[in-house]
Image (cartoon, rainbow, N blue to C red; front, side, top):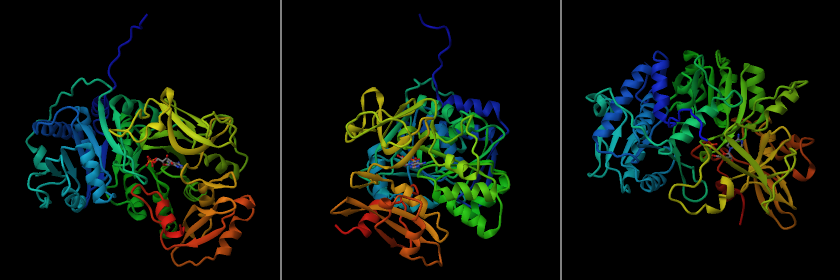
Length: 541
Ligand code: ADP
């Protein structure tokens, strides 16, 4: 027998309507590309979003068409998120830190019809546009006064955002879509092989936003002021534009300015309470706070994910600035939140060491997402906190296949399980620790050495700015670890300093065989260490 409750479709337009009706006066603040701060209320955002939806409709776009964005975190980007998805179009965010060849590959693969671009990203778009095969128009995200000329092929129309929406009506009736309708599209960064598209649905996005807002995940509230440093082109800023609006948080967008000084000043000026980003951003912020003597006056929580958070960040922010750093893990393929580290009722650390020990794992799974470990023969691995295995994931917001890409079929298992490509342990309380990417783990004499562990220890040295561990081929052991060190500016460190620093912190057989130094460790488009590049630079074939 079926129950007798209503079964409304889970649609992104419902988050929109809730936000503008329940929190009309809440603010959205943006550091703009043109310069200066822009502020308006949820109500004004709503009216402009509907104007944009009308403008998009007037171009003849149909449900399911892809609209690309090449933009920083800002209010117009938020208008685009909702105007596209709520009206049945697909919001396809593109990463402006990619090479123009990758941009044209992705735009053509997605068959984007219209592209929206921020002013200072226009040169990249011009380069990429030479190879576009589907784009009919480019809209520059600015007003008439700041509008620029674009050098793109003649058959691509050039429009100015403010003029595009200016004369449109601010009324729009969102269509009653099936909740499984595609809502947005994001390509993985593609450090190996071509980028692969993940096509989210309205249902997965709304359920993910609910998941994010569970107390044991990230949660936002109407008393919060959220600053997503994580870009809106990087897995939808980890779902912040949906989850924060669902709860009516004030939102602050940093635009393209992600350096320590700009972030500190914006956070203090706007009274930010929670912020999210990758470890490299927070390392820069911490260094800025230390050197400038400034404080974070209102920030209570920093959510860190995207790569493993070194202990020094938990301790630095916790001890010196009274900010609670929360470790989270996820990936583009899961919208992205999989786990977050929040303590259990009976976890009462006896001292600071234990307190920070407990913060290190990537956390427990959020309801709506499940995980398990498999060994190389696909047998399940015991969750004892020690045994490592391939981490598999499934859930309401995990992909079931990539978008028009058949190359990854062996990563999808019966029952909806997806092989994340990560290696992890899970302890008896469900706390998961990522030990490595499958392709980065160092396999030495049948044992696995975590490159993340080696890096975490090394960046704890006060003269080390960043560090990366890679495998070097070895006749006897197959592979041995090498650590590549980027010293703090103006500091000199020796191989002996580094090896002495490892002494007593890891087993002897895990000690790096080699230490190398570099001025800068190369980072990819999402702030992660480019290990392939380091292998090319330091490992002779
Ligand atoms: P995102 O960087 O937003 O998590 P990506 O899809 O670009 O999304 O990358 C996902 C991969 O990043 C994961 O499979 C994992 O290897 C790595 N990763 C994400 N969060 C963490 C974390 N907290 N610790 C270690 N690795 C992480």
